[in-house]
Length: 136
Image 1: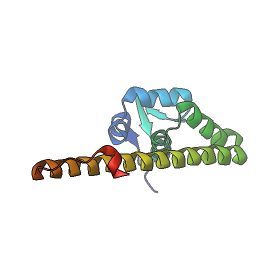
Image 2: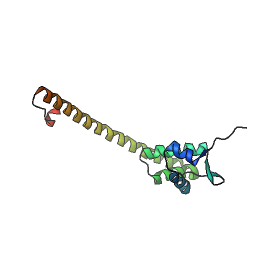
Image 3: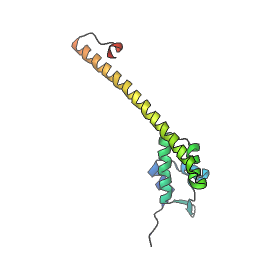
């Protein structure tokens, strides 16, 4: 018989760098369901670890707890795949917009870096430094 691997709240807290209170909150809101107890201690399964991986992913991409709760409600309860697809499409579009914004910000930073590198060289050579407008 295959032994089921379980995790304590301390193990899970360390693995995900989350306070135990957050894990208890997730349990209260239903994000983590069917958490068993061994006496007074919570016992998490691999399914809980997988769920927390998804929650962390969603949070890191900017999803709110309410959006994450809605996603898992539709995944677990209603199995409304159209709604799930809509939620994930919306989040994917949000991520794409964030990526574009990061690219634009990176270009601006690279332009500033180039500007200050040229100013430094000009200073070291005793030349007139370039102006910001000259870089375009």
